[in-house]
Image (cartoon, rainbow, N blue to C red):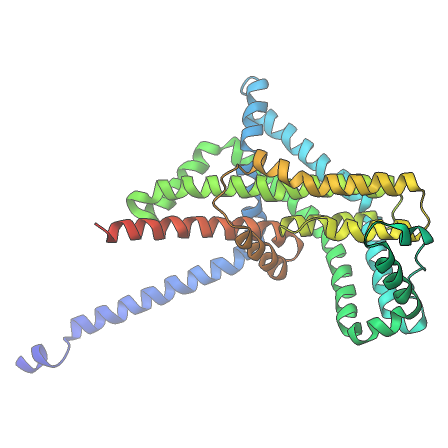
Length: 365
């Protein structure tokens, strides 16, 4: 009996340990199984919650205008959002795919002489300061572009395939966003239950600070969704208007690339600048070139005006964090992950920073 107390375990404690291990294994298996069953729905649900938080102020205004009729306000919001999403995409869908396929085809058939750059117009040499250098470099590329690009052929082929894949993901992203809009409407109609469930989960996880964590996460989601995704959508729409008006082939593709760069916090001029050179090379009218150049500058500069309005002037989320979230989401989840990744990663960064600040203040006491 003494040996059992000092060196060994009693049969009762052994059975309890085995029972506990079996219970934990069953719970873990059940949780893992449930995760894989719900996995296809996680992205639209997360995207729907993000849209619900971002659209909440507009929904409340619409609900007040309609005399508190929630379902009617939600229905009108869904119709309006789908119209704003589906109509432009349908109008530019052929342009997106055709533009991506044209670029990819030219790259793949580079050795057959299909990848050509027209000679620089004489007017380029008259540009102030940089004109002569640009004119010389342009003509050099026009005469031997294939030999210049041949060492980068594998990278160019990979870029062309990625471009086609990105264009094909547009349809899936639109369907996923349409489903997310419906989920957002349901969440907004039943917002009391949704908020209570979020607060309960937050309290269960974070204890007495759980409610504060949930509120902080909501603010971070709203800030990034409006200040990053919203600004990117506006800039892409403005770019599409200018591209279509200028008659640029594949306008939908370039507008899509503008949105990708805008979410990644890169200036749209990186896409619109080469388009300006294309207009010059294609002998477009001087009026069209000047107007499109001014419009491109306006689209790029609109970031400085839109972000303070939608995101706030004192945002605590660094650009690098948004960039990592956007690119990581794009690699992991495709086109829709570009938006969700930026929001989720920025929210996680904000919560982690708050937790670290709370830990530091607690240690200093």
